[in-house]
Image 1 (tube, rainbow, N blue to C red):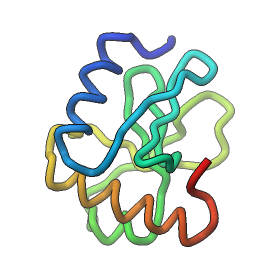
Image 2 (image 1 turned 60 degrees about the vertical axis):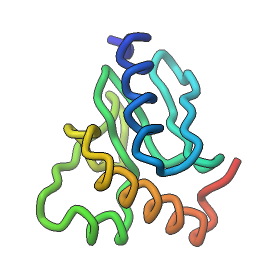
Image 3 (image 1 turned 90 degrees about the vertical axis):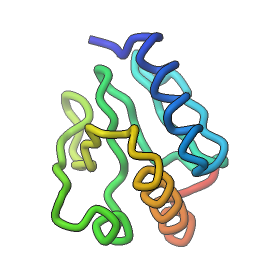
Image 4 (image 1 turned 90 degrees about the horizontal axis):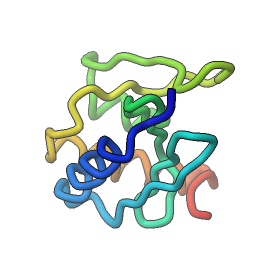
Length: 109
């Protein structure tokens, strides 16, 4: 099942409201890649939000996180984010995740 347009619109509005940066979603294989200021950092699959796992992200989330595979056949687990309406948490998590991805050379496209 692919993500719904209504969910993507709402999701993007919430992340934009967090103030993390310029958020956009790109359709990929029926679901969406999520970018912040040009950095690919997350996926939305079947109306579920997944963020790439980073050490900095683990610090922000503490022990309060779950992981999962974003799609059938995925090999790399990601943080599964249920509450993306917590603007402060989302801003911090997105910013540190993107910074670490850029540092590792896995960021901007």
